[in-house]
Image 1: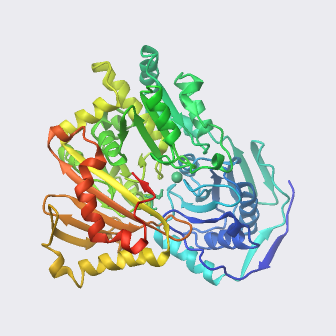
Image 2: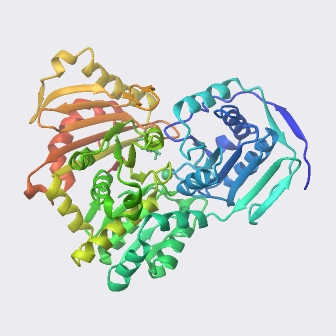
Image 3: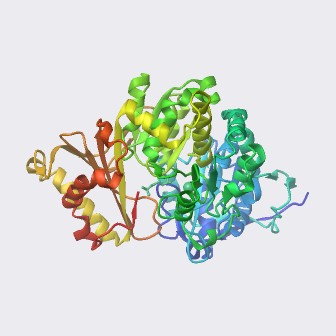
Amino acid sequence: MSTFVINTVVTTPFEGQKLGTSGLRKRVKVFQQEHYTANFVQASLNAMPSPGKKGATLVVGGDGRYYTKEAAQIIIRVAAGNGVSKLIIGRNAILSTPAASNLIRKRHATGGFLLTASHNPGGPDNDFGIKFNVSNGGSAPEKVTDRIYELSKQIKEYHIAGLPEVDLSELGTKRYGEDFTIEVVDSVEDYVQLVKEIFDFELIKQFFQKNPDYKVLFDSLHGVTGPYVKKIFVEELGLPSTSIQNAIPLPDFGGSHPDPNLTYARSLVDRVEKENINFGAASDGDGDRNLIYGKSVFVNPSDSLAVITANAEIIPYFKRTGLKGVARSMPTSGAVDLVAKKKGIECFETPTGWKFFGNLMDAGRISICGEESFGTGSDHIREKDGIWAVLAWLNIIASANEKKPGTGIKEILLAHFNEYGRNFFARYDYEEVEEQQGNNVINHLTKLISTERDSFIGKTYGNFTVKDADNFEYHDPIDGSSSKKQGIRIFFEDGSRIVSRLSGTGSHGATVRLYVEKYSKDPLEYEADTQKALKPLIDVALEISQIPAFTGRNEPTVIT
Ligand code: G6P
Ligand code: ZN
């Protein structure tokens, strides 16, 4: 046991320590500035909700991106300097976001620091991030993140313990001084135990044994999930080790975007097509996003949410806990709403950001939730969970094969569309346009739905007549809080919808998102190509929003 001194360091505020949709994300170089990280950690500790930082237990870990080690050491010293009594840290400061959320809950911690910029590229010239989570295991709610920002603007000093660098590669508990303890835990173990309790591992394993030709490929995109998927899919479920790729976590994710979508998970998509792989999947840098892709079928995340909800009862966890309600973020398609209606359960529409699901889960109102941005999950933790979504699909497929051998991703999707109809959905992203250009798009749309409202409502563009429009506002039914201006929604007479908002997760410039959705109950359309089916509506969306004119971009950066 070694004691330590606490130094108070005089500092001045840094501009822009404002948390986005999911924590503070900046270039690594910004975090590397003297005092920058310590300031933010101090502001976060000061903003901790009651009972506050003194005597707190915090979980620390992240996706292993560049600057993780340095940030972890700063967090250790500032936490010790502020009377935090215990840190539970993943080995080498590694924890996937779902694993961190689970640890906070399981160990009844006061909160945690998650060191991640999620799917943003890493490395010395790219992004780092810090996210503060609270005792339910979820991202801090807005009242806490607003407080962190306020305090970051007034900060005059931080308290830092004179501790030597702590070796985070060794498991075990060490005590420093009278009441500061660090426990380094295995990054994978608790999480694996959790998912084994949720899903029918035996059934999935048997399905793979009975169908040795059913090929699976999981791409970790060199993010944090490598060791998790190796343990789960290879060691537990018995798949060959060739079923995983890019499974070694790298601080720069091998130089690419660790974002599981059709653009950045290209190598997975290509291999699935070329090698006739039945089930392709990927997760992002910190392991909370997922992509499910079967041969020639991309599972849209909005559909994935609906399919998992429709089949939830076959998953042991939901058999035990019952299927309460469901929720989706506003831009996510209404596919899940139709399932909820049929099942007679509540369905909530929340703003973009997983944190908005937290209150509903804590209050026992929802079991499953999801977002179009490749996020799906349930109330087993308070973050979305990439591996969970993949296991949910495998559990559903294994179960469906009991009744009807040969059922794969495509058959499950088609059966779903036949029962509920199909919500065609696409998203156009215009990344890193100038901030002013992004604001111009939103200001233009705001004018259309406010001062020019009278001529806008009822106007016809192509085959689409505007029925209604607003800027989405959410009233949290649990804590009564309101979140305004969450995205412009334009509804058409035929039930189609377009939505536009600015992303809250970029690290510089602005990203304009455009979401289009059209519902079809025509079976002849169920296998249609999404972009083709949506083309007329996309044209109208571009005409109304004037995005190309305002941004100078004729093509989006990414189409989902
Ligand atoms: C993160 C959040 C999600 C959110 C997504 C997109 O992954 O955890 O909750 O949906 O970012 O947010 P954005 O503001 O960039 O559209
Ligand atoms: Zn993520």
